[in-house]
Image 1 (tube, rainbow, N blue to C red):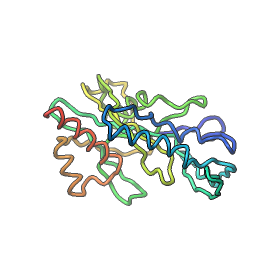
Image 2 (cartoon, rainbow, N blue to C red):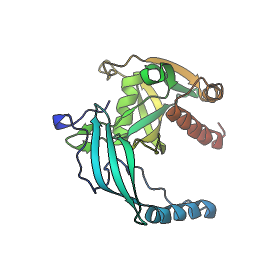
Image 3 (cartoon, helix red, strand yellow):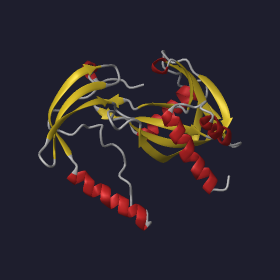
Image 4 (cartoon, rainbow, N blue to C red):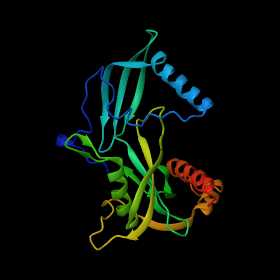
Length: 235
């Protein structure tokens, strides 16, 4: 869970300065595929031609994890508008896969969703002395807290925004393998978390998505990205 810094402030920055959590995603590298590299080139041009620069920033609400801000912006063509943005420090999603091809999923009650949901383990990046936690460190921590297991290998396999129309949260997806139960000194879930562990073969997890049983978007994206990887490996 995200832990605010001194004074409980989630972040501090001045108007006209880019949101420090907004561009933490790794920039895609050239793929060697002409059609995809052309898309990357077009996006780089659009970054400049469609840029929106903040000229005034107002905090509307500061919570335990997020900030709601109202930004006045100027576009590259000189036109003006405003944006309502929910600022989040970013998060990790973990796909724990055992030797039998089973994913470790968690069930927890989601108040905003009005019910229990089946999800991949995940959690927000912590903030320590003004510096954001390394995503891989966070992935190991969240895996142990939510499942009681540790990973011998943690590999980043993707990343995505949860809702870029209004939310800065960027999620890094990790594949966790070589799983083993944590020792007696395991990290425990946060005090406000009530979690159940479910083991499900990754192909059955896809079926659960198609049946509408898995409804969480970060888990759907993570499972499908993992499935493409495993299918390409002939698994």
